[in-house]
Image (cartoon, rainbow over the protein chains, first blue to last red):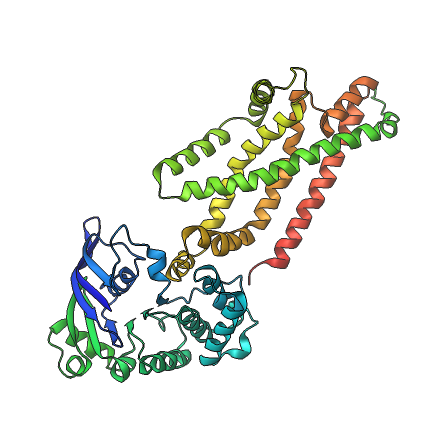
Length: 242
Length: 227
């Protein structure tokens, strides 16, 4: 589904990504973790071309992301993405947020789009909030709407960029529950997150990054039981301590 | 000897002054509409990653912001009427002063509007554009549906304030002998030998209108201030 081969990216002389390679198969759930500044968010944003990269290749469902001939909009329409800061459109109601891209990008009828949006809103447990505006919802609720908005496009895979990092602690679980459910239904997912409980529960593989390199890329069992690199051991020791 | 005020020529001049006000308002309105539309395009060009576009917009804005408005109006007064007459094959005596004043104004004010709008676009968090793109929207769709609506909402007070300044600036069209409000007041005062009274009266009208409008802007700002 997603093949990342030898991807490198730099800002001037600063290397953000160094020769990163991995693959994500259909139905797999991959958790990407690592210290801040390790390039994990950049890597996931390269997958749908939000961040350009200088060398290497990323193939998503048979389409090369870095190829200048690729219609990126068309590709992105079917790759869902959830952001750290939700990025709902504040000037639109929740219903409009869910429908707009379906109508404008996929060309669906307004009624059909609203119908689909409301079904997904129900699925993330927020049907009662359909008429509200994003500013009237809590962070956790907004993020669940953002997930529903991405799902409304019938994505072939979902990218999560630290979906719970901006949330108050008591709201983290409502978002992780939705993500867990999604994973169990067989959605292909790539998640940048520090939520190791989530990784242990649903991930197939864990990728650990440091200084722009993929340091570990292993099954979750192997990663948690016996991380090979010293850097990953230190990271886990710090993060699992509490 | 103390100057003796004589206000008696004002009541009779009201119809002329009213016509002048209509001209001032007409120029203001056209300049606002063109200024916002053309200013938005300029702002988008300026922020564009396509170098020639952003250079053109930067050059345009800097040029118009670095020359006095009176001068621009005079250029347009002297050049544009002949140009338009040639273009449309109009007889040479057609009165195009209003049209050229409007064009001059609109092009000048666009430079100021584009800077306001550029700041407005930049006030929308970058993540909004990323979210649009991640949903498959094109740059144009993202701008039209998501970025510009938010940008305009953020900058309504500034746009209105600029409109008030613009209204005052319209008095400068007197250089092209156009009978706007200020020009009409001047003419009547000159005719009746009561220039001081007419200009004081005109000043009072400008003050009342602009002060009331800026109070309104303040009120709106308070009412719609984002929490």
